Length: 389
Image (cartoon, rainbow, N blue to C red; front, side, top):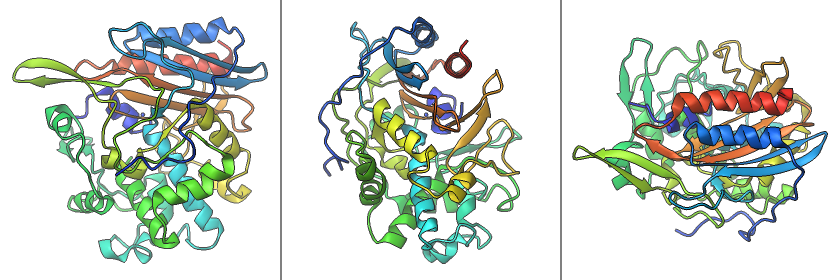
């Protein structure tokens, strides 16, 4: 069952050689102002059961960076405030941006059938490109599904001992899609909403088909290089992550005993363009600010990205690779969370980009992961940053 904290983060709900995107030199840490309320908020996240947190905030008072907890179990050093991390489903915002850039160029029709571009899969012709980006395609999530009646249909192994033993296995994107298509669709396309990583793997294949280049090459060409994101990469099948970085852990049952292993190194091909990317809080700030500031998409498509579809679960507010929610004080916040085993990402901003928050957490995932406590502390953190309380 999908009971680990990673299941929450994987949904992005409020988680060969390295294909480097720019230099992997250690990024320079930001200088700091004292913001005790922010330090207190991230310490509360650690107290909820996480190992460590690093966070960056930009607002009318300038920039603040800080960290709490530990970078590595059984050691005392805090997580680096300039550290690399696996961003999980925050990758989807990058992937959606690439697709929408191709829409802007007239190479893809947002409301055209996805099958027109990817005929090899025999997709339901009612599924449009828009439905892939907004999770209304009804395609089975290859990481597994929970149904309203309590039924659970497992997907590929990404939890437990089976995943730990095979965490360096390589999956091909086409393999993930065909696994999904071997399962029944959840509903008629466009009539409901269901988060599915399959949608964003198809988006990757769509990008590659239309451009003739790899997903990694297009991420570099269209986003990384124009924005000078020197510490952002799509690693493909490489298990490596540049230094400095905090460590991720996974706890599982083996022959009746609990074991905890360091899973910082893993082959991210299982999550592909739905969650494989690596970045830093500084680069995420640069990316998200540029996106919301209109530097990556024309106004009409940025508006589409930010507009939740009528079938979206209300509390989710999912647009096209971007989510919309209200902080407790009523402020509108745009975001996409993410995570993989033992690592989580928060990427939030006001609509005008005047206030942003990027954070990364590291923790012990799996058995007894602090799911409920983490979710509560994230909401408190959002209120602290965007409501001043």
